[in-house]
Image (cartoon, rainbow, N blue to C red; front, side, top):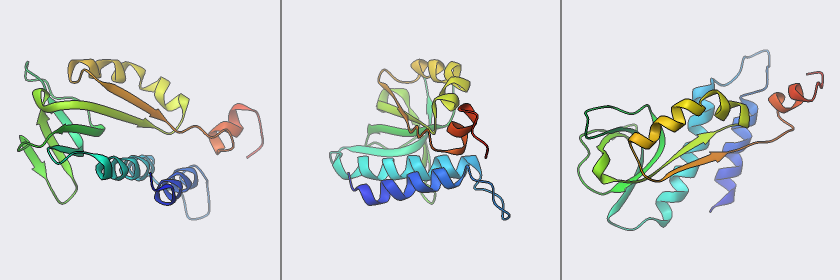
Length: 146
């Protein structure tokens, strides 16, 4: 992976937890920065007939998944696609694997049930957790004054 872009995204993720006089990055934006950096790196190594994006999956029962950080699927026309933001809704039959990206363990634990529900939409589910104990959240857990 090209570490420079990934490290920059991780730094933005950490910045999002810092309180400043100017506010903080919205948690959605922070997560999007991190997952999009990983998404771009995965795109660099995928085959021609495979596509990588973020979006949602429609299963055989007509159920629509929650937003998925990274989807890897066969390069067919998605059911719906918003190319300007790289977002797609795809059929479950086209899914190869999905990735959920979380900023810390607490974030995963608070969404654990949602993550378990993803098995209705994909057979291969990966979880990426970026945990840095030096972030604001990590310091709070260790009772460090912030």
